[in-house]
Structure formats: C-alpha cells, structure tokens
Amino acid sequence: MTAWPRDDTEKRAFREAFGTTAARVHAIELGWLERVRCTTLYRYDFDPAPFRRLPDASGQWITESVIEPVAVREVGDLLALHATAAIELRLVPSLWPIHDRAISDQWDFSIVRMRNSQPRTM
Image (cartoon, rainbow, N blue to C red; front, top):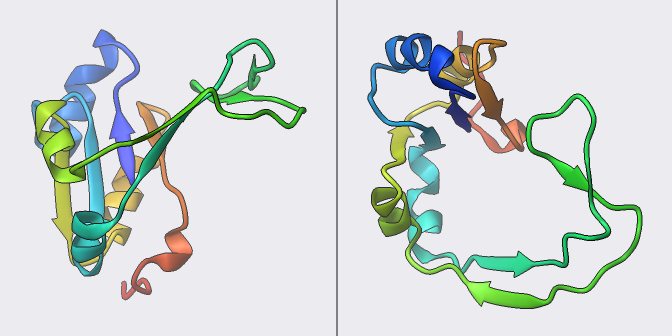
C-alpha cells in the first residue's frame, strides 16, 4: 500500500491522517518483511514514445504495443532506498486499517494485490 498527497493543498490532511511529515507512506504486513529484505527487484527502462497517459488516472501510462526495455537494472536494498528517499515504510500486522485510511479522494494511493494480505478481522 502506498499513499501520497498530490499537491501542497493536500499535505495537511495527509499528514494529519497518517501522523507523519513524510511526503509518502508505504506499508507492508509484517509477514512480508523477510521477502522485502531478500528479494531482487529490477527496474525496467523503456522508450517513452509509445506510451500515453491513462485518462482519469494519476500518473499511470500505457501502451498498446509490445516493447522491449532499453535497460534493466537491479534496484538494490529496498529498505535503504526507502530511507534515502525519505519515504515512511510502515510494518503492520494487517494492511486493512491503513488500506481503509488510504482509500480517499483527498490524496493519491495505490493498493495492489490485497488478496495477498491477511484476512480482514473487523
């Protein structure tokens, strides 16, 4: 899960809701920590020409054609990268409480594969 204010007018509500001064909050469940520590993640760079902005989305770009990456690089230590970027990474027993807070029209958020989270207990 990740959430961030889109502009300066959203920062105050975001900071109050998440109790942080960070510009972005990421959260993972405790059970995923070892995987984050040990996984090898790669960044794929693409020629931007075939992409177009997805309408009614916030920063997503798509292409209808098959393209090859121009570069593939190993990202490195994910925890250190969070610290370097001043992104708050929260380790939580369950994603559901922060999921419910993140879903808002007051800021942007991205939540992928909630089906891999612990079941909702409330």
